[in-house]
Image (cartoon, rainbow, N blue to C red):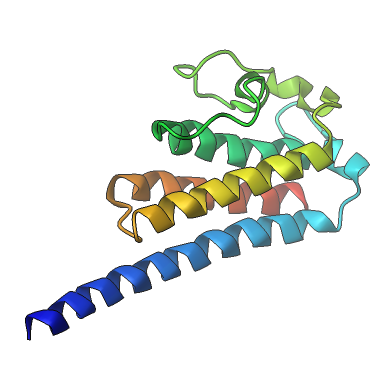
Length: 159
């Protein structure tokens, strides 16, 4: 009977990990799907100083996970340290940031580079979740906040 309990616990951990992995992939894919109809030029457009471009949002949501989730792992290395300045939004305690009103002037990194960054971050988030077997505990609030804000931000910037 003790073996059965162990299998049940392992099964629950696998189910939790699979559910979380599916959710992470789903939100990240939805965000990219919404942006896919836009050209690289469209993704750089900033219609007003208070509205950031789609490309910036795509990068910022990755920066958020990198900054508040992935760098806590000793094995993780930042994709590009210059992104700390470019894609920080309002987290003053994290450091300086590029002015919101000038985000549409960012020609580099390219949209292709931003998409590579997103892929890199998604891969590392999934590795972290798998390593913890779905037991994210302290990571849960960061994952939730990051997913909610990225889905909302990209859906409103592509309207």
